[in-house]
Image (cartoon, rainbow, N blue to C red):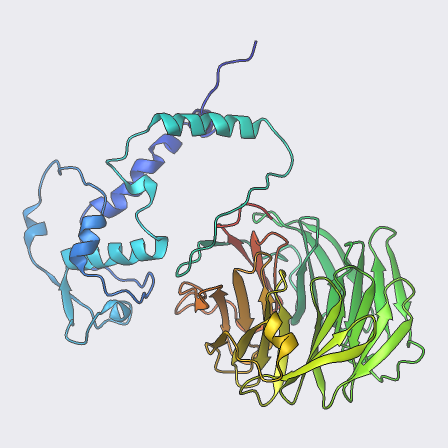
Length: 480
């Protein structure tokens, strides 16, 4: 006979004692009691101009105080020109506020940051039968093992619900610049590589992120590292070297690959792996790009553009290759015939820097030296020589050096390694920037060298020049 169901709240109380049951009330008090002293802080600067009256209407119901202190009725003015409160001023004439109005202003900004009043702060909300059934569903969930994959609703624009996690490489931080961070295509693992001549693997849980393995490549500062499509191998190139390494993770072997016959390159640096795992594409000098077989590591053929090739990428089906040139032109190649099927000019671009294709094949993003990122539809790129971008993203003031789409094509990450904190997350299809990332007045990211989304967008990682892999949990997505 199955034992009676017990809610998750009962289990938490049993594990941690009665204190956990009062935690909800503790949080509520933060917004019910009046502040006795001067309030300072800058929660989040928003674009909304809602009045304090509207914010007051949206606040949860408060209980009648047990007693009233006469000193609280004194209308003390708070100086709003202080550097910690200056960003909360709505006009230059608003040089001071009463404590009550400042309290409302802080609550208003909190609601804007959270996207509304959290359920735990709603006093008038009562537990319903639906909530009881959800607790029972939680019991069933805890009785199962395995991956729980659910389809999320479309991502809303404005505020991105995210959590700052422990650095992905916290157990082995690098003492040099991280040039690569990449999530494993199927396992809950992330790889970091950099100029400290090492490639490291970590398990991603957002809490401890334990190290799995770290390999050292003697006299080989890693320029780029990438998983194979099946996730069983790692390919790594260096800064000034004509050879590269292939690490067989299943066998534990590190295989050096010397100069490829027929590929006349002094150095091999940048490369891409085809989505089907059949090809390896190297970006060479003098406009050459070289297509290799992943199975034999032999040269299949080379293609040449007019000018300097700066970035290349495969389409999601692996049938085409996009190559961005340093002269502001983008070339499209057919993989089977290795012929150019179209060439178009990136609007307003003097010098191309980076390129990214969305996972669903709908969009092509081109970054330039001016910091402008033009986003095109794939159809216009294939058919026109001067296509108009659906959006020109102008949130970077230095050269765009990194671009990445998430798996659902709802987020485009754009970044520059020329300025600190120069990274933005763009909502698609509205093409508006999420206002809460990166955090204002906090220098955490520094220079972005590499970034990647996990296979189902549950995590986002940034590798910086300080050797840290900054990890963020994107709460909208329920799976890794």
